[in-house]
Length: 211
Image (cartoon, rainbow, N blue to C red; front, side, top):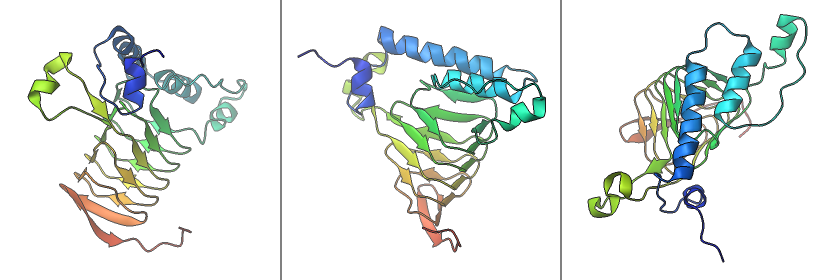
């Protein structure tokens, strides 16, 4: 039986080594895709969606182009809207639902999958860290040591204020709001407000939305 690759170990949340040719190449691919996205001038919505899919390594073909610019733009009404600049490690581990809005200067350390539900909103400078390092410095060993991670899951209809940080393994339930500047270290239940460092539950949200 063949040994798992470092990428396979990474995706499983096991200890893995990031500075191997395969993973260095994967990060470089995403880095240059982010650079193209971040440096784009005034381009049609179609081109922005195309460049975002390049970042996330999404091979889904775009719909055929329409002659009318407004009609063509309408084809992408439900696509995620990501403001530049955005900074991402691998890209292929980032999954954004329909109608997600990501404001400028957000960071995705997508060692493990980062999943964001439909209609969720991010303020500026939101950071999602699914990767982490061993606490023991002898094991951590700089760039020669192993890393690990845990997935991040953010439900539908959430709102993360500016400068929120979400740590590995956290699940934020549907309809939750995270106050600006919070550091989310533990799960947040659906339809609750959490804030602070570390973030704590403040209150339940009254809503007509079905839970």
